[in-house]
Amino acid sequence: MANKTTIEDVELHLAHPDSINMKWIGNDQMREQLVAAWTVISDEDIALNPRLIGKPGVGKTTLAYAVARQMGRVVYIMQCTMDTRPEDLLVTPVVAGEGKLAYHASPLVTAMVTGGACILDEGNRMSEKSWASLAPLLDQRRYAESIIAGIKIHAHPNFRVCVTMNDDASTYELPEYIQSRLQPQIEVAFPSRDEEISILSFNVPFAEEDIVAYVADFLQKAHQVNLPFTSRDGVNILRFAKKLGELRDADAKGFLSESIEAVLGKDGAEFLDTGVPGDRMRGAMREVIDDLDEDDYEDLFGDDEVEDDMPEGDKE
Ligand SMILES: Nc1ncnc2c1ncn2[C@@H]1O[C@H](COP(=O)(O)OP(=O)(O)O)[C@@H](O)[C@H]1O
Ligand SMILES: [Mg+2]
Image 1 (cartoon, rainbow, N blue to C red):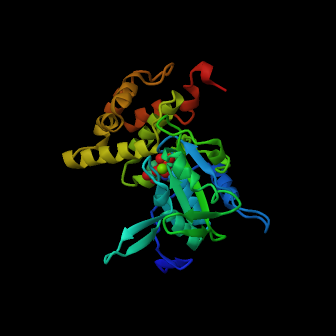
Image 2 (spheres, rainbow, N blue to C red; image 1 turned 180 degrees about the vertical axis):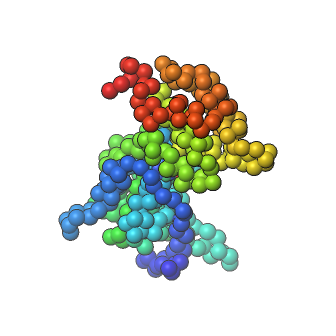
Image 3 (spheres, helix red, strand yellow; image 1 turned 45 degrees about the horizontal axis):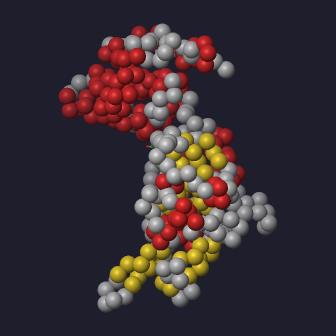
């Protein structure tokens, strides 16, 4: 692909696409909603700009990436922060020697001109000023104006964009006129136990089945009491336990609680000690790991065990 393009006589250097070995495992409804939002069904129709919302690490970026690839797009991930300025989102001038300036297109603008997909990752962190520069792009006008390069950039018909947002407190409240341009809202929820096991084994294929199942159960139990431990944490717990095992030349199983404490900190340690309120395993999470053995394991974590252990009041 050409790495330069010219708009209104201004030469733009294009950004590089992201290519990652990512597979989305989980609920088909979320995937379908994203596909539907991005599908254009007639000449009068335009693509929607969905917002994927969920806890950090539940798989929002993974879902957006997987769907964009599935729909045949080259993907550009743009990491948004509090410091992202309008020019970072669009075009940045770079000194190119001899007093000359070169213009660099952002991942977003590169996706716009080449017909790719852009993921505005963690967009909730970005200031209103930066969002305001995207308002015309996010409605039927589908263009953005770069003040710095003095050009109006029209989006290719194949261009698609979505925004991921963490639903934590560390975020700016987006103004209404921006929120209304970022619809539909797709809630990315925690995976089921089976999905969790698939996610963990896909990401850490060298971890044994029993520790994968243990970590999946640990996460499921944490979800029941609204602790925000996610698949990303699970992947890190498994990876770290395996590394400790490798280094100490012993079974990774023996290092799961150490790994959980190191990855999740105080909250993780506390949860290991107390378990789920009303749970017959209360206080036993740590012991379970310490002498995890396959037969005992079956007894402790039957398939329907998670449901059975729900405190009465929490049942639907
Ligand atoms: N549903 C899922 N399918 C596949 N991998 C997942 C899933 N959820 C989380 N992961 C894994 O967990 C990690 C974090 O996922 P990510 O998409 O970055 O989360 P988020 O964007 O919500 O913070 C990635 O390494 C990813 O491989
Ligand atoms: Mg993300």
